[in-house]
Image (cartoon, rainbow, N blue to C red; front, side, top):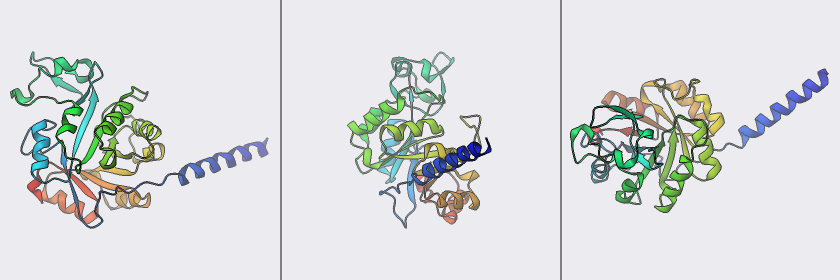
Length: 266
């Protein structure tokens, strides 16, 4: 009996070792080895309402290397670019984005401004130039497959952005499915100590989703965590860098890039 238990333990250890060895993160070719990459947080919120076409256009116009955006499903399975799970409708009621059809979402004016509307993912891709780095955060708290990953990857391919995009998420199950659909697409695990999407909130989820990059809240990044990330050979982006103090911290720790609100911070 003891021999069988030892054999099973040995098999488990071997399987874990093989699983770990097979994880070799890919370093993004569009990252410079000696230059801090600037990514616009939902466009350029300091100049235009976040996650709007105007904001993404201004990110391009101000010379940002890339943009970060949030993608989630509407009730009719449209890929909409919006960060929060819910939104205040013109009627004053708070509704979940996933419960609203896109025809309803289109009628909502952000901050009461008629020109600020929630765009479709395809609308954003149409205005971005092909040299723009795109950090696509897929938002879904669901563990089971909803099909959003497949639809995002199909859209990215249609617009020819496969070689300069990173799919990121706080949900490791999403990243695992992304890699299963397309092992060559770059992925990044998002992590912060605040507002976790899953009950068990830890950087150790990387062992499940095996991403290429680790995108971390600048407020929770320190030297120990940075060393751990680098030992795993993942590239690192810090979010959201707003102040000069946060910028200096990111530079000191040696991150590859930062996700930022104001292009004039540097």
